[in-house]
Length: 363
Image (cartoon, rainbow, N blue to C red; front, side):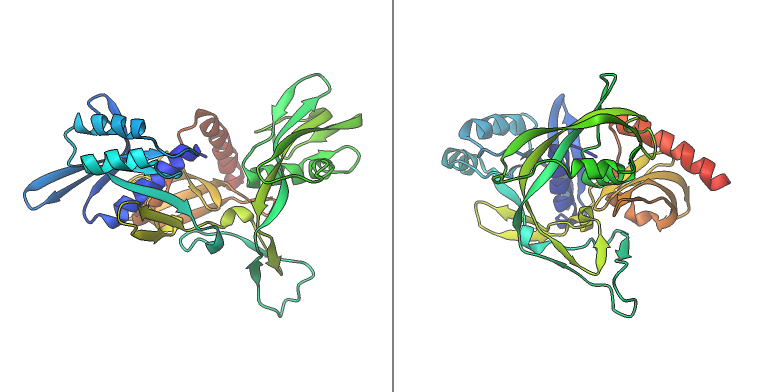
């Protein structure tokens, strides 16, 4: 995946890409040795314009000092327009500085009441065993409620070695359900023993579950942790706001997304965007590259580009506790919706996944 900061910056870049006609929008560009989160370039007649955008993913409001620093940074590049975007809002001093220097201010929020399925991505739905086949597939989302979420799971082996389980939820669910213990249980059965109890929103506590006696565990593969003897499991339990999924259909929670609300702080004008309809990736994908989409999380390898078609190998996706792989052909116009994978650790895993995918597909 990518960091929350990069994800937010790409969302802002995507918003300006779809709202600024014929503009060239770039994420994370270096200009004269200075880094800018988003850069927008466009022409109006014979004139050329450049817009420089600062994006802050913070819990505290932007202060006057933050605005002063950005004004200087943008002025040094002779920007036609400077834009400051934050998730937390702005202090009064920051707004005053922005108005004085003509800086546009925006906030990004997510409409948690508007959860929806992606319109431009494929996902997998499973009918529950007890659901009659003659009844159509149904799914509904319940009201927000406080849940105790198990996070940051560490496996401690009998020889002292420690292995972090993947922290992305769909990956964690897959490895928890598919890792077998010698006594017949799964790793998920062990994790469910974490004492949840009463916990407040955003409150966290550490728990340890000891296995007596230690149990030999066997994961479905060794991309995250190996076969070995598990002595204990450490985890963090955090109070999160969650919404129950109901119906006769199993849908991976990672499939859902929240609409983005982009608000002009000065004018009060708001715009609403679906994340899957924003170009978060590159203008054109390249053969031999690894890419991903976030909802649901799917990792792809670009195997070939033939005319206006891209041949993809879906080499890693976990939905409803199952691993999904596929070969897909798609119009190249959808390239901008695929985000390049840059994390070296993830790239190493995906290269091994690709080798295994090719071996299996050749059998």
